[in-house]
Structures are given as structure tokens and as C-alpha cells.
Image 1 (tube, rainbow, N blue to C red):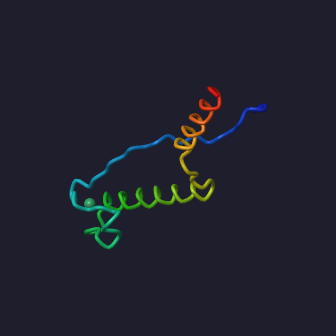
Image 2: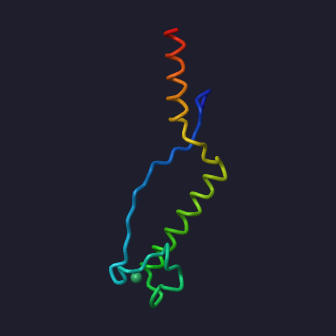
Image 3: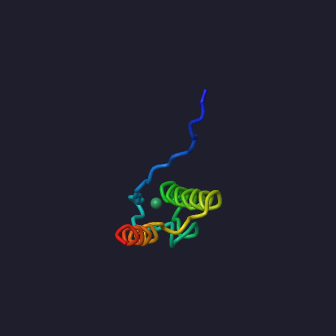
Length: 87
Ligand SMILES: [Zn+2]
């Protein structure tokens, strides 16, 4: 059914911001679990979202390590080609 098409998982870039209305100063990145006051469910959710995001990034890097950006190399190669082309 899938034929010869390449099957790949696509994930879009998500820009997400969240803040607890009762504890706007809580930052799960720097404060962690110990700083959650009164076991606040919103702060707990923020921490959980942050933890899952970090885990997702780690898994993606484990699956496919980040390669250096090819932009600079491509521009250099392109420049070389034009030099040889003119010679
Ligand atoms: Zn809170």
C-alpha cells in the first residue's frame, strides 16, 4: 500500500509558552520540582511538559545525531565550482 515512497515521521517546530497564573515566577527549567508550592497542578504540568520536551529532544538526538550545518560548506563548494567553470 505504501509503495516505494519514503515513510518518515515529520514533527513541526513548536513555539510554546506557559506560565502558572497563581505562581507566575515559577520556572521549571531553573526551579525544578522542589519549588512547586502546595503541589500546584498547573506548576506540575509545566514541569511535566518541560521534562517531556527534554526527553523528546534527547530521543531525537539519539535516533539521529545533529549534523553540522552544510550551509557554509555548500557556499564554499559553489564558489569553487564557479571558479573552475570560468577557467
Ligand atoms: Zn502554580
